[in-house]
Structures are given as structure tokens and as C-alpha cells.
Length: 444
Image (cartoon, rainbow, N blue to C red; front, top):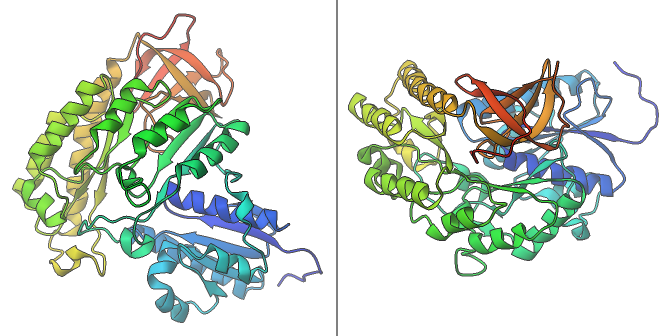
């Protein structure tokens, strides 16, 4: 057991789950540091004596990872290696009472909107004047900007409204102030995130205000890319496509999770859209924004999904040829609309279907990447890894999309800077290139 001397508390914040959780952790860190705490983020072999675990509760795998992480730190606390253990985030919001009974080593549990209470437990005051001054844990040239919280949609498979509540938009003025602060600190790329981007503004402005927000953010000096994540397809506001097409800083990129293509499955999912309407929307996006990179996610193994319905999904993916695609396997979640349905697709079938869909996407991605050979792209470089500088085109978001690799043995680029890269080789999910003197020959 460690023998502690009297010293100032040190806190380590551990983040699990999505980029929205990461922003929450960054706000926690910002507030604590403003209260003179020493705070780190996901430091290994750290000497922190207080741990805050920010959990995810989206699907079963994420829940299990969160529980395993809490148990790991509970064991460390029992061994006397840390003094306090606090848990916040989605899992805590959803299962607080049950978890408190099962893991008594945790000193306190907090929900997704209980930052002031968490700070109060640490005898730290919530500082409203820190709005716009959020610290970031990402590389300094890009940051996530959460434009709203919660979701009003009623998708039958999704537990997010249970954990995040109803949709609450942040005012444009507050978002512009935060973005301006990020730009002053060197951020060049803003990645706009929310549970549902297109609903933005309906609660406070009584209209969909994402186009207006994009216009205001585009005026900021220093910001060069603005990227859109998590747009809902039903009743999609076409004005957003117009902004992507006309605002040079808004990336020709749209993350629009579609989930499925069988009308029967979409109806059971309560997605409020049909395959035909989805096809029309994707075609319209590609017409208004030529060369747009569309990222989507699909959900396989939803209750009742037949072989024929899955084949409809496969045919749709082949037909649409999305630039980027990810696959989730259905997780049966309590208190969702789908929980009343029988989870009748076996786990092995879910896994097989997910693998099949990704094989289809791999072929599409490889073909599209081969078409890029010989073209020059503007690439933002995120890091050096092994023998390569690793960057992204306008068509790629960090962590989830393709990357551009440039040999570090005979080439040089600065991390956090843009460079024109001529593509000379391609694999299924990566491009290989070299620094080019010529001008850009393709946007995405």
C-alpha cells in the first residue's frame, strides 16, 4: 500500500465512448484547472490520487468496457493506490442506482448533466466565464464543437434520449465565441457534433439554424475546415447542402447515419424515412455538392431482420457506393421501443452480416481510392507514426476514416499543417503519396 504524504490532490480523467463524451471530459478538465486542480487526461502510470471515469452506455460492448474500467479503478482504490473514484457520463446516468449497489468502492455517481454537482463534490465552483475557453485533448489543430445536447428522435433501437435527454441547442453566439477561442489557440478544423445536427435551432430559434451557424463559423479567421457529423436523414434540410456547396471552409463531407435500407426494418426502427426517400436524398446531395464524401453507418441484426431484408441492405450499399461506411451490430437495450421485440437474430449471424457488409464496403473503398492515384489533394497532417507522416483529406474525419501516408524517410511535412499531396498508391482504406509542387487537381 502506498504511504501518502500531505500534498495537493491530482485528478486523472478517463474518457470512454464517443467524441461527445470527449468534449464533456474537456469541459470537466477546464473547470477543474480553473479551480487550481492539477488534472491529466488518460495518463498511464499516473500519480493521480483521484480518478474520474466518464462512461459510455450506448450499446452492450460500450457498457461492458465502462463497467470493466470502473471495476479496474475500484480494485486500485481498494489496494490503496488512489483516494477517490468518481463516475460520470451516460452509463452512470442510466444505471446509477444499480451500479452504486454493485460497486460500493465508487465514492459518487453523476449523470450527463451534473457537472456542477461533480465539481461541488470536489469543492470546486462552476465558472460560467469559462465558456469559449475549453481546453482540448485532441491534437491542437482540430477540435470537436458540440452544438447541442440530447435528442428528440424516437428511433426504437436507441437509448440516447434516456441518457442525454431532450434536444437543447446552444446559442450561435456561444458557439462562435468558443470556436473563436479555439482558433486563437491554433485549431484549424472544427468538427461539429451533436446527437442530431439538423435539429439544431428548432428549440431556441423555432427554425433549423444549422445553415446560419455555418455562415457565422465560416467568418472566423484561422478556421479552415468545418466538418459535419451525425445528421438525421428524415426531413433533411436541403439548405445545409447549399452551405456545403457554397462555403469554402465547410468540407464536402457529411456524416449521415442511415441504419438500414429495407423499408420493413426502417419502419420497425421508427426511422421516419423509406429507402426510396433515402436514395433521393443521397442523389440530391451528390447533385448539389459534386464530389461530396458521404459517411454513413448501418445497423445489422435488428429484431426480425430476415436474410432477404439484409440482402436489401447489401444491394443498397452496392448501389449507393458510399465513400465511408461503418457497421454496428444490434444491441438489445432496456427501455427502448425495440426492447419489446424479440432479439431473434443470433449473435453469430449478426457478426457474419457485419463482416459481409464491410467486405462490400472494402471493395467500394478500394476502387474509389485507386481512382485517386495521380491526383493531388490538400491534406491536413495529424501525426507521425513509424516511418510515415499521417494525414487526412477533406473527405476524412479523424479516427474513423481513411488516411494519407507520406514516407518520413525522404519527405517532410509539419504536423498540424496542410500540404498538397500527390497520390501514387492506394489500399482499401489508405492512400500513399508524396509532397507535390503542383496545384490541387481534386477536392475529395
